[in-house]
Length: 213
Image (cartoon, rainbow, N blue to C red):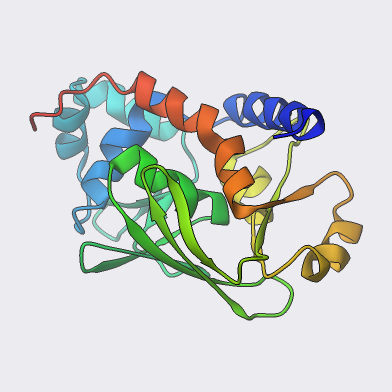
């Protein structure tokens, strides 16, 4: 990673860490339960996180992007049951994610390997890759890139970041989008994963829940 990209990575980490509605300590417990393929109740999440149910309710109240079903159970936070352009297949189950970077980060957070398919934001052509806990593999096309942003005053995680983080088949395919988003960057898939690594490590370090339940 060159100096310019490293500086961008530092800005990205700072910007995302400051985004409202992101409770780092809750991300891994919640996504671990979602990855089991069933809607998540407050009680299940409290047990998994090792926190009182009231604390979970207060945390979720500050996470407005969280998705619920008609019964009030959680069905999405980054990893979601609701279809998006980013298809995420793991252990025989099909999920979706809010953005391209999610597909790169979640295998490291959850300790599994995922098959990812997502259309190029510009051309609609599919970008396919395998993502392991150690990073992306078998990226097709090999020229694929990921767009990233570093808003100075982020609103919500999904609005400020996820809605701007896409796959493109190549840097050339991203040119028009970059013209419309001059403060954004596009990086090769492996570099995008490296930029997201500090956030992954922060999420893992913030999870104080037991792995036994």
